[in-house]
Length: 300
Ligand SMILES: [Zn+2]
Image (tube, rainbow, N blue to C red):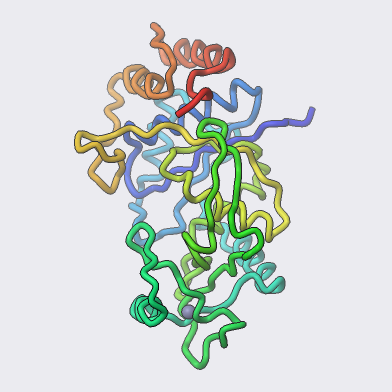
């Protein structure tokens, strides 16, 4: 029988699971189970300087304590460089990737000279200085490979299963983004797109903080001729300061002394009703609720 649904949970081992990441883990697992599909865990450890040794195993243990176990052997992105290189070579062959020799200072100077002040998440929008049609590297050493964002269509549109119709002008809001640093590390965008395709992922369920990455990933999928998965971005858990709970702003590791309580909180964030019982009993009840048309699907 062909499995029509393959989903994944893809944590970065920069810190243990916290209340926010458990929401995404639970949602992706429930969506896979409700569709009779496969659920895979992928460790996204391409950003090696930020990864903490041993945290990958700790996350897998935390998930298992919550009854969430990968249906297939887990994969580590740090072991998949050959696949990413193949994709980069394909993009280069299609003139969709080029080397860039700009430092952060170069980029700021170029933006200023052009009278632009384009910023996004405190990062300057790359002005395309090293695009081949603008003269290429011009003798500078390469610092990174960038994706030549297609200008047609400039506005990328897609429909999120929860957030509804979405649009982003990738050319103006993001610009040609980095695929790989010259010193080795692969960018998250490329690794995710390559892995989702290589693993046959049909449905991406992840936190809403990543929704903004989707148009870049769709642009890459189209340029590489890869299938587009369906997207569902789950609600975020906010910390006391009203900001998204994350490892970066000091989210506490999950207290899994009573895993069912941690799961109840995650389920509540997803709009599911509290159910009594053990971890397996609660998970089973939430699968039924999810199948019945979970409130999350309706609107943000
Ligand atoms: Zn450049």
